[in-house]
View (cartoon, rainbow over the protein chains, first blue to last red):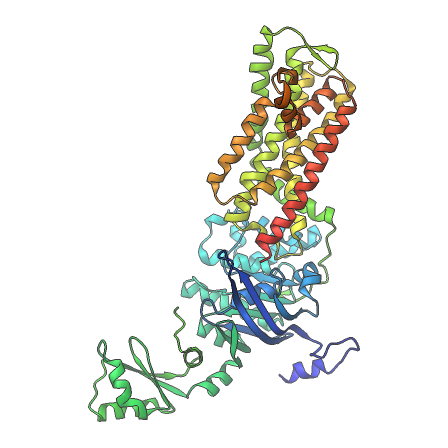
Length: 331
Length: 268
């Protein structure tokens, strides 16, 4: 926090009201789509946000929350319906190509060039940025190392595993050494090992000072990677802050999870309501929000209730999400 | 680890010409190892030339083009020349463009870079045009080898086939942006075959009479066929200028439509 503040202290005359090193500024941003029925659907319904240089910023929310629509507007490929958006100080409606030249984009679905091999995927993509041939060639070598794909350089894309394709897509988004890297659900659909490898790579980028903006619906991913995040639901931002701040503000220190027999959760919720700050009823278990989970378990037993299974854990972003949107993330 | 730090100082703005060349480069790299695919498209009109121009031509006595006596083979050959540019342009600007647009989302990938929809339109149309022109150039060499060229005007057949490739590549790509699935391409075949057979390719236009003749004279491949014929037989006239203007306008309109359609489909 403190270094971003001191950096922004060096004001420029032409600087807008916001911080000089704001990578993204959105004010009252909206996005509507005309549906085939003729009706208009509003995916983003007025959001304000600011992402600073070197920051790692997350959009969290269920499917359909408006995360991807927001990301497409930031990527300068989706015209803003209403409101103001500045990317790297530029207007995407006017300076689309100049903005995109400085962005790295890793889309939700890999859109690798199926007709090119791994090396050419990176090489041709690099050339689209107007980079000189030799510069691109050198960078492709380095990126193949980074993505652990050097041995696959001559392979066709279809021969790669899901994790490899994802790594190639991320490597591709780095070919112009972007000032701002956009990652739309970077680890969705990957197995745990591939996810951890990817997290390590993203963490290295973060350490190298690259500004990251990512969407995810994995809470652990947001907690691991994001300095700051917004929770989106139905097109609006419902909370904003650092992961720990959000957990502190919207949840308790611990959560006691109690599993009872099928259909019993609703009844027991009332009996246990006074044990914690709040009780959440999920289809398969009860969540009791409290500062002392073990005490909740002890008192539950004192009252003669016998849960089939119990678990005491730290509060996580998942709980924040549940609190704010009233739903679990598995939509 | 230098790769990881932000540094976009080497990113250079692309001129329209440079961006077009990059798309052509991308397609060239794809076909570099698959050049045999080019051979079939080139051979088709050659087979027609041999079977109809020369085979059937043996049964036909001399022909008159623009007041000049030519053999039937020399009459059919420029028709096949125009048709080869037409066919070549069609393959890439229809099936291949559809595949890239709808299935592999290649243009979405390109739009994550400084490339614009205008660049994509120009680049893909130029590639289709070059593919058509490459078929036609090889065909022109076959004509030369077989003594079916009768004038130095034939040198201008090279820019002519580029023009034909441009016109069809642009219009076909524009039509492709409205296609919903591969079944829709039956409609392309429905247009392609009659154009190929009835654009004065195998018999002269005066076979038709009245409105039918006017209609044929207004179709694009006919303009391409007569233009090539006028050049390879050395019977250039004012009408050749009409064909050039027609094809040029057709290509430019197609290009503008493609660009607008890509905006509507991709920049949502």
